[in-house]
Amino acid sequence: MTQPVNTKETTTDLYRRQFLGKTAAAAGFALAPGMLLTEIAHAKPADEAVSDKNRWGLLINTNKCGSGCTACVTACQTENGWGELNHSEEHSRASQKAVWIRKVKLKDKQTGHVQSLPLMCQHCEHPPCVDVCPTGASFKRKDGIVLVDKHICIGCRYCMMACPYKARSFIHEALQNQKVHSPRGKGTVESCTMCVHRVDNDGTPACVEACNAEGHQAMYFGDLKDSNSAISKELAKNGGQQIRADLDLNTGVRYQGL
Amino acid sequence: MLSRKTIISTLAGVFVLLPMIAQASDLLPTVPKAKAKANPETLCIRDVKVMRKNHMNFIMHKRDETMRKGIRTKKDSLAECISCHISKDKSGNYASFGDDKHFCSSCHNHVAVKIDCFDCHNDKPTAASKTGSTLK
Image (tube, rainbow over all chains, first blue to last red; front, side, top):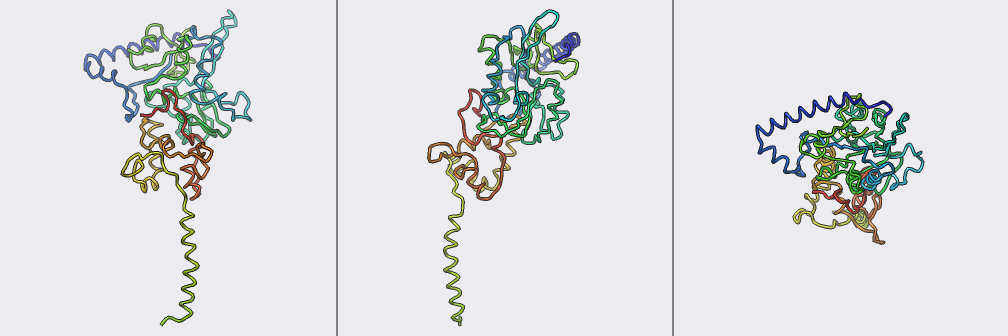
C-alpha cells in the first residue's frame, strides 16, 4: 500500500492481456461459435467441478466509493458472520480481530486529495499465501478464488505474513453460531472468500450487492475471462489497476481511480 | 449325572447374568430419529448400517469436493445431515453438540470419539441467507 502503483507496467500488461483475450475470443467464435455460445448461456451444474474457463474478479471504482460508507464491510459481516456480529474475541486487541474486508483511506499529502476504497483478499493468480503454506491449506481454486481449507490449516499464520495486502486474520477464540455456509473456527486463518458459496450458485458477492443497493455502483463482479461480462467490458473501456502491481501477482481484484 | 454343586452354581450364574443382559440394552445410546426419510427403502441417504459405519468417509470425501472443486450438491453435505438429523430439547430449542439429545453426540458421547467438526461448523440448522446455503 505504501508504494505507488506502477501505472505504466499495469497498463502495458493489461493491453497485452486484452489483445490476447480478444484474439482468443475471435478464434473461438471462428472455430466453434455454437459451442462457445452454449457455454456462456448455461451456468455450471451443481455437480460439476469449477474450471479454469472462468476467473472470478472484482473491479472497484474508488471515485464512486463513498468515503464514509461501510456498506460492503457490514454486508460481509452479515453474510459471513464475523466482526461485530461475533463478540467472542474478548481477549484480542482491535488489530488482532477478524477482518475480511476493510475500508482504507488514502491521502495524497501534497494535494490533500483523499480516496476511500475497500481492501480485501486480492485473489492473486500467483498468491504468496499459497506459496508459503506448509500444509496445502491455503489454495487457489481453478476459477481463481483463493481460499483457506480450514480442515487442514494448522494456524501457523505464515500466509498472514506473506500477504502483501494484510488480507488475512486468525481466529484466537472458540466460536459458536457460525453461518452454515461460512464455517469459522478457533486456530485457523481466514479471509475473503469472494462469497464462494454464492458464486457457486450463480450469485454475486455480498459486498457488491450492498454497494449497488447503496446506489454507489462502485463494485463490479464477474468473469475476467469472459469478454462479454460487465467487468471485462468496463476493464476494456476504462482499464483497472492492481495494488502493488510491481509484485507481479496478477490480482483478481482491480481498482479504478487510484 | 450333574452334581448338585454344578446345578446350583449354574442357576446362580443365570440369576446373576440375567439382569446384566437386561441392563445392556439400556446402555446403548438412544439415537434421535431423523426429521425425514431421505430414501424410503434405506431410511437415510444410504443403508443405515452403511451410514453408521462409514459416514465419516462420505463426509470427508464430500468436504474435499465442496472445498476444492465447488461441488455443492445435497448428498453427503454436512449441512444437509444437520438439517434432517436435528431434534429439539424439552424447552423447544435445538440440542447443541455435546448434548446427548444431539444426533451426533448421542453416539459420539457413548463411544467417546471426539470430533472437531463443530468447532467451525454450526451444529444447528439456521435460516438460510438469500443465495447462501440454498444448496442444489
